[in-house]
Amino acid sequence: MEKSRSEQFDLIVVGGGAAGFYAAVRAAERSRGLKVLILEKSNKVLAKVKISGGGRCNVTHDCPEPFKLARHYPRGEKSLKTVFKIHDAKNTIEWFEKNGVQLKVEEDGRMFPVTDDSQTIIDCLMRQAMAQKIKIQLGEAVISVSQAQNLFTVTTQSGKIYDSTFLVIATGGNPSPKFYEWIGRLGHTIVPPIPSLFTFNDSEEKFKDLMGVSVPNGEVKIAGTKLSQQGPVLVTHWGLSGPAVIKLSAWAAEYLHQHSYEFTALVSWIGSAVESVVQNQLAEFKLLRGKQKIYTNPQFGIPQRLWSRLCDLAQIEENRIWAELPQKNLNKLMEFLIRCPFKIKGKTTFKEEFVTCGGVDLKEIDLERMESKLIKNLFFAGEVLNIDGETGGFNFQAAWSTGFVASKSITMKYAMEVQNSQR
Image 1 (cartoon, rainbow, N blue to C red):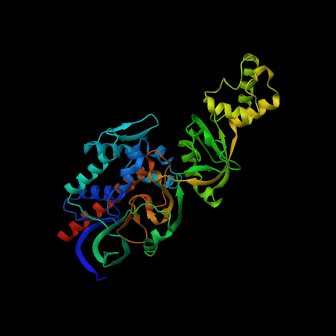
Image 2 (cartoon, rainbow, N blue to C red):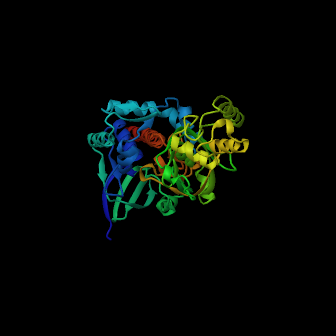
Image 3 (cartoon, rainbow, N blue to C red):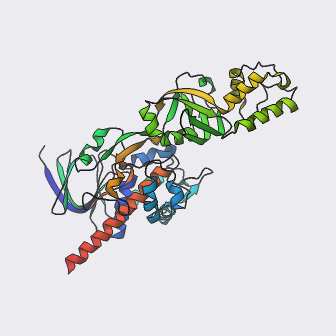
């Protein structure tokens, strides 16, 4: 295909997602007259924003302290402390509110627009892009980038060529190494991409008929490791889900990938329980509730259907009362309460929660500027980097923060260039 050269820009942002849009808009806000272009390979921008949080968009998390915020990132925790000191969740909330989007905090700390509609976030970003006269080109997949005489030349699959002084790569994450090939050709190291944020598939399907049953405060551990997470646990028709499982999948992403997603998950239905304490509680039930049937009187706030299944596993008959329960069955009940085993084989990933562990190596990035240490005026933002967070708005917050830091650095450099040219 014949190549056609377009006009020259001051800044080209590759990727029309959350990080790319935020970087472009914040840069244009700070430097009036900055010519900005967003290149998006698909036929629509902000696609992940649209479907995230079940269509509500989990914008960020109510975590105002930068260091505490950074603790929610399995990859990038140390590096993000630097980034969040410059732009944190509070700054994100302020910017959206300043631009007409009120956010609300839910009980678990997640923050959504009060409209409960992701289109509110998309409309806000699009409005600001239009106000700043940012040009957006759809269907433009970048295949190569080169730099000569302080000018980037970006070539797309359609044969078009775009030039700019500054370049931000904000292409998001992808499980395919091919996705990163053109970035690798620039000289940057790509940490092999693997999935993060997923649910566990139970190979035995022994709880399948209990789908929909949940506990508000369970604990899920990976047998043979110290990896564990607490929170709500949900039984599904394919296995286990809920915040505790999804958080664990993020922190254990590399381990689980290495083990081909075959492992034993141990579930405590009553949270982080101390074995001796649970033993004493069960002994107390036997003493104080001797005439009460075990099977039909669930304890520890466990739903009846789940409690009945745990009794079945502990071989406790339906008519058995506490006073007549043999010690071996009591011990079995305790085991299934705090160490219920699931043989996991495989994972299930939801599109709206899809996140990649891996990407551009953070060692090659100046985190105070989000600038490449290898190539002057090349910046990165968002999930294309080896950064990923737990579920709960943390991945979007990393996108907003890294996008802002890149924009701030670019506008400071641009201002210096303008000053020098006027001398």
